[in-house]
Amino acid sequence: MPQIPEKIHELTVGQLSARSGAAVSALHFYESKGLISSRRTTGNQRRYHRDALRRVAFVRAAQRVGIPLATIREALAELPEERTPTREDWARLSEAWRSELDERITQLSRLRDHLTDCIGCGCLSLENCVLSNPDDVFGERRTGSRLMVERDGAQRKPQKRQREPEDCR
Image (cartoon, rainbow, N blue to C red; front, side):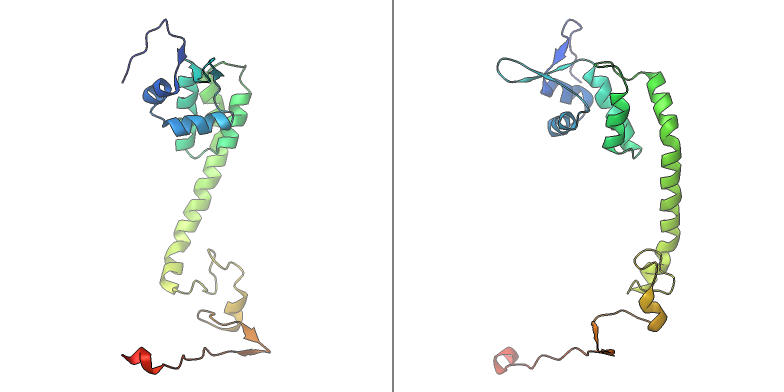
């Protein structure tokens, strides 16, 4: 990992990328979303304050646990301008995000528990399919998949294509 001398207070996008492990494109994306900021040189090159390293680490850690970028941006907006998140900031924010994560875990566990039934079905129209057809209106009238739209109360049967003589070659 490249070392940056302490006297250098600004980083190029390449240096920030190398130190943070985030791709340059990700850093540009984070900047466009207001998660980090830079100043432009007279040559229109980006320069990031060294504090951007901690902000990027904060963003990436929050993303790894499933926090949406909009929520991360709101959390960073609560911090005074240019201040990097501290350990106390992380503790406070992660506590606030805990209930949201617990709810997502509960939802995913519920989906996982119902997944086996739907894989076995094939048509994804079981009587109680909670993944693709939670209200399963068709399941009350018929079983199996629904390939053709009903017209006038009768189901249309697919027509077979007549083979042309040149198809038999």
